[in-house]
Image (cartoon, rainbow, N blue to C red; front, side):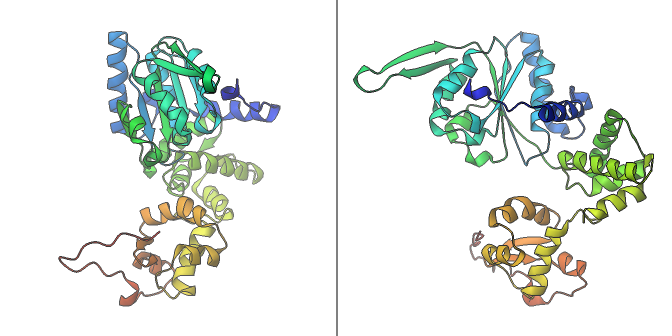
Length: 351
C-alpha cells in the first residue's frame, strides 16, 4: 500500500541493522527524560493492569532526542505490536484507511512528523481516535456514498518537532502530551557508553565525556560523533577511545570544546566583526554566511540561543557578551539590547 512504501536495498538493510541495536528496548535502558519516563510508565502499567489499549500519546521536541525510540519502548512495555509510518507518506484517505484496518486490537500506530499530515487526513483521524470508526467517501458527485469502517481499539503515538503546526482539534485528542528536552553531558555519556558496548569497542570515560560535551545535548548527534571517533581511532591504530583521541577526531570536524562547529562560529563572527556587533536581520545574516535563512533559524540558532551566544531582539539577531568574549572582543553598551522601560509593553521579536 502507498502508506507502507519503502525503498529497499542492501545498503538500507545494512544501515537499519546497524542502527536498530542502538535503540533501547526498555525504560530502564533509556537514560534521561526522567519525568517523561515516569508518566509513561504509569500510563503503560495502568493500561496493562486493566487489560485495555493504551491512550493516545503525543511526543514532541527537537529532532534526535528519542521520540521514535520511546514509541517502541511504550509498545514493548504493553506487549503490543507497533506499525510505523510518517506524515508525508500518508497522502490520501485510502492510505490511512489501509493502515488503520490492518491493525489488531491493542496495536500501536506510530506516525512520525505527524504535523505534516494533510488537513483532510487529520480530519479522518478525529473519529478514528475517539470512536474507532472511519468514514470513507466512495466515488464523487451524484453517486457519492459514504462507507463507515469499524476499527479495532488501537493506540496512536504521534511524534512531532513542531507541536504548534498541529491543529487544535487533533492536538486535544491526545490524552498525554510529552515534551522531550535536551540531555546533559552525564546522560549523553551514559548513552555513549551503551553505544560503545553495542558496537564492540572500548572507550574511556574521559573520551565519552569529550564527545558528550560536543553533542549539542542530542543523542543522535552523540551517536554519529562516536562512530566518527571510532573510525578515527581505528585508522590511527588506537584500540581505545581516549580523551585525546576524541578531541583530535572532533577537532578534525571543526567541532570545538564548546560544541560549536564552523558555521556556528561564522554566524557569530559575522555579527560581531562584519556587522560590528549591531543587530542583524535574518536575511542579511544568511547572505553574509552563505546559508539558507531556514537552515540558520532551524538548525544553528536554537543551540546558539540555548547556550547564551545569541539572542533575538526586535531589531534582529544580536551576539551576547559571552559570544564577544569568545572572540576576544569587549562589547560596548550600544551592542547590548535595551530592556523595555517600566510600564512599556514588550515588543514582539521580528523573525
